[in-house]
Amino acid sequence: MYCAIVAEVDKRLEDPLVGFFIQNLSHNLLLEQNGEKIRVTGYLSPRLPVQEKKHRLAQYLSQLKTANPRFLPGRAFVRYEKEFNWVAQFKKNFRPRQVAPGWWVAAPWNKGKHKNEIVIEPKMAFGTGEHATTQLCCQAALGLVRPGMKVLDFGTGSGILAILTTKLGASNVLGIDNDSLAIDNARENLDLNKVSSKVKLSMDSIEALPDERYDLIFANLMLSQIKEFFPRFKKALKKDGLLVASGILTYQLPELGRFLKEKKAGLIAFGRDCDWAALVIAP
Ligand SMILES: C[S@@+](CC[C@H](N)C(=O)[O-])C[C@H]1O[C@@H](n2cnc3c(N)ncnc32)[C@H](O)[C@@H]1O
Image (tube, rainbow, N blue to C red):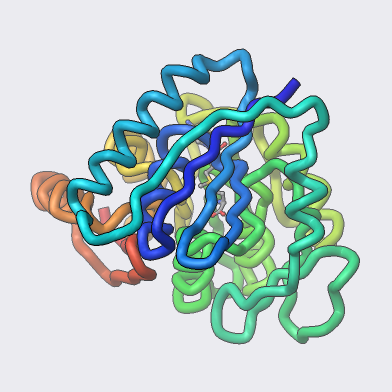
């Protein structure tokens, strides 16, 4: 039995709602547009405190409604499903998509249409290229990766950034994730892209960061994690190394700005896509 937690809101509220799901409920999302409304379905294990999560979602929808009184009202509900059909539904809608200028993500069954491709078998792991936070990292990678670089992809998900950085010339990449499903999917995707020899994967978290120095670290996480892991990332970077921090909602930028000022970190570049932002930081 699987649990689907669903919210329907005015489609202009898609970005903040997706952000709320990813940061609080689930990153296994299905997005469907229905006229003026967007329906977001997040899949999670029924072993989690589902009713408490639904309650938080309902509270969030009422905050959204208060802040946007002229938008259509939203609703939230929970559905239980015998068959877990998220992947099947997602696959049905999966088309090659451009994640950065000239770079496309395709699935194994629709690959070969573009010169620069990352092939991803869409499964439960985050990183199929449809999300702005991933795309902002891909765009940053295009400007930052140089041949021979050593890269840490912290929270690798599907391995998409590890694959892209390798294809851009990085010679030594480490992908870390604490979700075994992500690591399994990343391994499969490294093989599909023939980059397994250049990327090492590790199912771990920040405590297991090796005592090595990287030119670049990608961290598409949550603001709270970026702040918490910042000292470890700083230690793991070479003298001129850079941190690409993504997964930041634009309303969180003042908080991140204060944090970076306190840490005397430099801001090298900034990217934004709707309500999401990514920063290139010199810690
Ligand atoms: C938003 S996804 C990013 C995936 C991919 N890098 C991308 O940019 O599309 C974040 C990933 O970080 C992983 N993650 C979250 N917290 C983590 C932690 N403390 N240690 C390791 N991995 C973590 C999650 O399992 C998830 O796969």
